[in-house]
Amino acid sequence: MVVGASGFIGSAMSHLLAKENWAVAGLARRPNAMAGVTPVCADLLDKDGLATALQGLEPTHVYLTTWARQASEAENIRVNAEMVRNLLDVLRPAGCVRHVALSTGLKHYLGPFEAYGQGTLPQTPFREEQGRLDVANFYYAQEDELFAAAERDGFTWSVHRPHTVTGVAVGNAMNMATTLAVYAAICRFTGRPFRFPGSEVQWRSLTDMTDAAQLSRHMLWASTTPDASNEAFNVVNGDVFRWQWMWAHIADWFGIEAAPFDGTILPLEQQMADDAQIWKKMVEQYGLAESDINKLISPWHTDADLGRPIEVVTDTSKSRKLGFLDYQASDEAFFDVFERLRAGKLIP
Image (cartoon, rainbow, N blue to C red):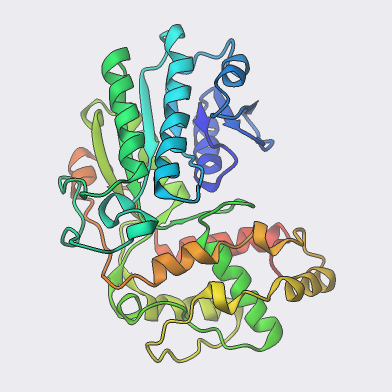
């Protein structure tokens, strides 16, 4: 069972499992039609409705790839912990679950959005043995629900900490690749400069990323490899880059020039604040499939990542030592998203 199957991590996970001939149930509030995936419509916060929706399903492996953004971290903790708890409570009577894989992220090391990159942070590259920060974080609350259920019910678990994830999903709350694609398309349409919105530290420092397909392969590997049971893992593509290099590559793909960067932060949330009407003109001119720009972009999240005042890079030695050797070039991961968006008439 893939929980959050309509998101870009969940959809990639569902496609991989179906390709590998697993019987797959894809749970979401608004599930999409996917070949080889049985849609399950349910709200994780409605425990009774969830129990009804899951009647007759006895998943052996559960992949948790969803979260619900709230107005404060206290609410993030309350809501997202409840979602994990409700799901595992509803599945408990069947006694079917063998493994649960939970996707979180590098906010484990960086802190929640309310205290993002503030205070004393662990040294980079981030390593899994670095402990929790002394700050409330909904990732920790999700983990605690998972650990408690695993100890009580006897299944194994894995926690997966990707860096910024690239993938394709309309309506996703944290979608850098689609946000940058829409921004680049608008810059080309209007003649505006394609300007890096973030910090000089991010512009010049090494970083890494995680493609949704790479994360899915890692989750499948950990959930079927006994030596990887009951472990937390960083998950990235396997390469490193600097944004001053990647920005020019993205510009080249769209046939535009990358504007010079003078070190001044100019957030996309500010740059794109009035772009809804421009996007509607582009939709009409090019026959695009989604007229609501807000279903495609998440500038707030892209700004948070690209505006960090510190270097962010991870160590994945733990996975490699245990046998996970898959690799994905990060520029090609961006280009794959752009090609899929164009093929789906989501960008011109």
